[in-house]
Amino acid sequence: MKGSYVQGGDLSKLGISKYSQSIFDGYFPDETFEVKHNKVGLLGYCKKNGLKYSNECQFYVTTGAPLSYMDGKYVVFGRVIQGMRVFRQMERLDCLNERPKDKIEISNCGEYSTKR
Image 1 (cartoon, one colour):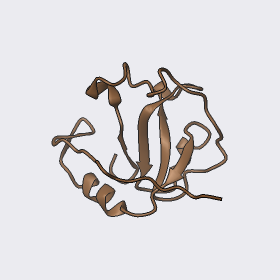
Image 2 (cartoon, rainbow, N blue to C red; image 1 turned 90 degrees about the vertical axis):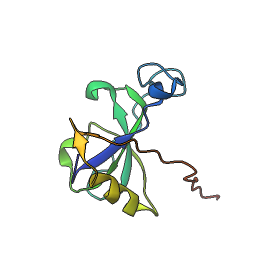
Image 3 (spheres, helix red, strand yellow; image 1 turned 60 degrees about the vertical axis):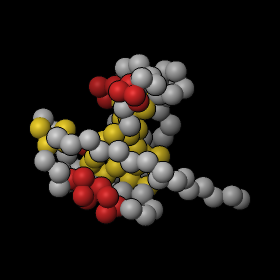
């Protein structure tokens, strides 16, 4: 969705999970809706048809802001610290029915954690 968000993480296409459910063998509950969709680079959970407590393995990264229509419906759980350029490149790809014509795969992307 150019200017809004990119979405990915459907493990069902890899045979890992059924129906886009999480790797935790099912959907999992909403956490908090305190973080608003008011910045580029926010990372959040996709939900089955926007229903409560239906978070799944798919996720989104915001590429536009504000996206207030997502506030109170989708949970933000992180943010892109480095590498937003990759998402900008994804937005430029040719799409058909809001899906890129070419396969996109992000691998070896690392994990950021803080130790207290």
